[in-house]
Image (cartoon, rainbow over all chains, first blue to last red; front, side, top):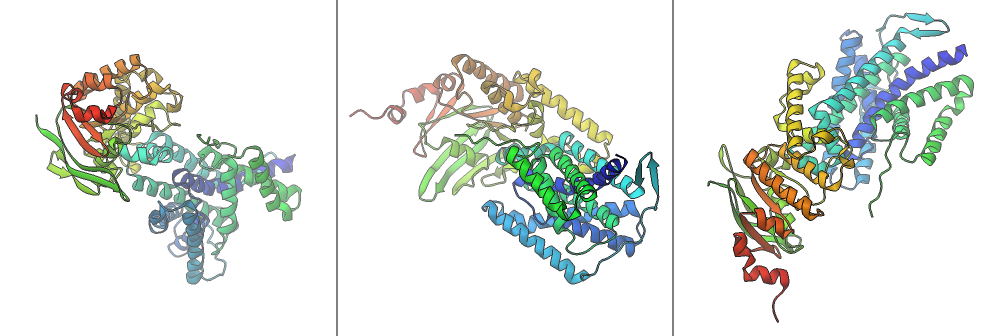
Amino acid sequence: MDQFLQQLVNGLSLGSIYALVALGYTMVYGIIKLINFAHGDVYMIGAYTAYWVTTYFGLSFLPALLVCMVVCGLLGVLIERIAYKPLRKAPRITALITAIGVSYVIEYTTQFFMGTSVRTYPPLLPNQSWTFGPITITYLQFVIFSVTLVLCVLLTLIIQKTKIGRAMRAVSADENAAKLMGISVDNTISFTFFLGSALAGAAGILVGIYYNSATPLMGMVPGLKAFVAAVFGGIGSIPGAMVGGLFIGICETLVTAYGNSMYRDAIVYGILILVLIIRPAGLFGKAEKEKV
Amino acid sequence: MAELLKVSSLSKNFGGLAAVSGINMSINEGELIGLIGPNGAGKTTLFNLLTGVYTPSEGLIELETTQGKKQIGGLAPYKITELGLARTFQNIRLFKSMSVLDNVKTAMQKNVGYGVPSALLRTAKFYNAERWVEEKAEEYLKDVGLYKKRFEAADNLPYGEQRRLEIARALATEPKILFLDEPAAGMNPQETAELTDLIDHLRKKYNLTVILIEHDMSLVMNVCERIYVLNYGKLIASGSPEEIQNNEFVISAYLGEEI
């Protein structure tokens, strides 16, 4: 039991990171119905940005986090403007393939400039931990929880309570009607990319510190897992992405702890298949009824 | 009465099909104009051209603005909305999953003056602006009699109320000209009568110029001061309700010609 609780804490911290990345997938899908496969690479750029600003400019954790979020947010906007905007009227599969292309471009451009070697970070957070009965929480885990929590609350407030949030929901519900109600669809989509990518940036620095490494291809697998988390929660649903991310994180950790870590990914994807058979729209997703 | 909107030789072709061609219209401030015609005559296409959904193939749409006359044909829809044109849709297009109140608030983008930074920092400016938006949106809902249902999801309203919510949402963009695309479609005679009163009330309260497409002749003949008739994409008549009722082109367009 003690070990179970401890593993739960570990799983939650990994899951928080998946949740942050999954939010970006789900927001972009919600607004333009595109699976942005380059999203995992934005998260990788977040980890590299963190490496740069902490190693060469000596920034401490919080400023580095902010810089990562802004850099990744802008990168997201740039990707949208260059690669997806010209294709907005094209069939969806075109944009999807473009997204895969963008993903490779980012990965190998990074590899070209940074090389394939693993980069490590200077110590950013105190090496401290607290013990509550059977559970030990490291300083880093505490930071991961709090950053994720704060960002999720902020995101929810932005979407539910502000005018740009209303615009995002309106564009997602009916793009053409939104246009005619005075909403600039282009700006709203850019802002959505900014938010989603900034969250990936935050995840990037957290993971970078967690594993103390940054590599050009580090975005692929976690990106895919976060995508699974988003689909699991119901793609397009923000609470779905949060819950989905946490769930996948916990599953992975428990399977590694109690089962065989070799089967970790197989079990995660197995669960996804099961959920999709029982609830094809995901946990929080709404099945779209076809009107006849 | 000053001229507010002038349309000259406006045409739209889809491939080889001329959906509307050579339309000339002149709308004065404060008028209530009806746009009628048989199905497929091009009425909604004309609305789409005027509100920026389509770019005209030919012709001009000129709006009198505070900076003088401005050609608005082909501008981005949100810019046209900013200049004071708003519309409702023939097939209702509300933001279904959002609340009634949020639907109206969404349409108030241009008049909410705060950026994302002040929203994040929750500044006084943000709170004041949001409070103002809320009060204003509630007032529009009172106008159309939906205040009590403001927290319901738009999708859950009955049909007639969804139509009225669309009108409230269009009002929230603070238009000078309001375009109503078949506002009475699917309503029973009593609902239509209520709608007629509502349009009249809103028009006076907000100083609106209204242009409406409608098949319900009781509504058109009752409230419209001037009527334009379209058939096969061309304007075949315009004038007062009496003139239109007795116009032989209109009669033949609707009833066919005598053999």
